[in-house]
Length: 345
Ligand SMILES: C[S@@+](CC[C@H](N)C(=O)[O-])C[C@H]1O[C@@H](n2cnc3c(N)ncnc32)[C@H](O)[C@@H]1O
Image 1 (tube, helix red, strand yellow):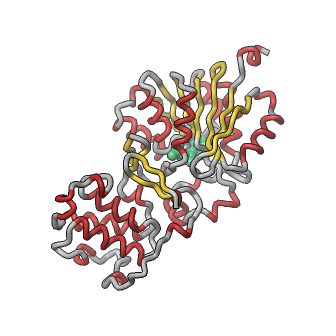
Image 2 (spheres, rainbow, N blue to C red):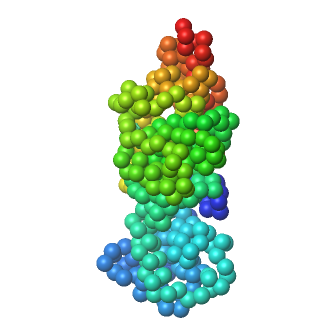
Image 3 (cartoon, rainbow, N blue to C red):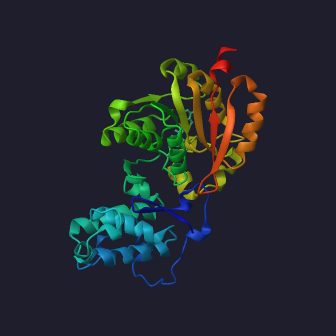
């Protein structure tokens, strides 16, 4: 199992799209009493946590329950939920005295409420309603796409192409665009998503990070509203996108938690996974400044397919520059927009 650490929180690569059965470490201890009734939503499970139970005991207690119930990442699920209730991000960030103190009735009830959501396989990021991306903490709400660890590579790559105006297509929670605005203090950005929930969450996260005055959010579909987007969005230096790129036929193989809670439109890229990507590439020459750049997170099968497609669509005058492989083995494509002489021909 590989882990990526952001600001102290770890994300198992099981949070990438595909189910990874080896991430389900089932406990051999199956003697927890009362576990059989844990999934009954009407039961007040606060009663299963003894009055003298401390935060530290509670982490072990819920880890066992998650293991018994086949919940993925049982230890981290328990640690994040209990740390969240105790006012920290990780168990290690909490003082020893906080962990060794008996929980209050309110804390036990809150832990039960959150852990029972996790027992329904809700991703822990939705359970605690926030997640970290590099040094930012973002608010998260289902069904808006949960930022994946590999997306950090996007952000790093985009830094090389630092420019004052970014366009993110498919902003989701705002993770990429807000990182860019946070890092490049003089930059501005336009964030586009077809999902109203995503646009709303990006706006809320921008306010939370005090960058809202440098961000314009647009609820538009890049496939059907590309002309409108080109009219509203002036020439930009960089387009970034982590678009839906899962091949439609691969959708049933995604993790059950993803399929149950996340917006399928955030994942399903159509028959060849390229529906939204092609729309972005068709839009790019119109909205990019001279020497503008495009960074796209794509499936490992896509770089070759896209280079062929670009050759067939030479009139777009986009130049393929490089592919970077990320920590999940996924690809980030770097393309260059038309140069001035190309534009004038
Ligand atoms: C994989 S998620 C990425 C979210 C975020 N950028 C991140 O990395 O966490 C893809 C996003 O693209 C949006 N999207 C899908 N199809 C779109 C379209 N045709 N036009 C605009 N946005 C679209 C989805 O709503 C979703 O928020």
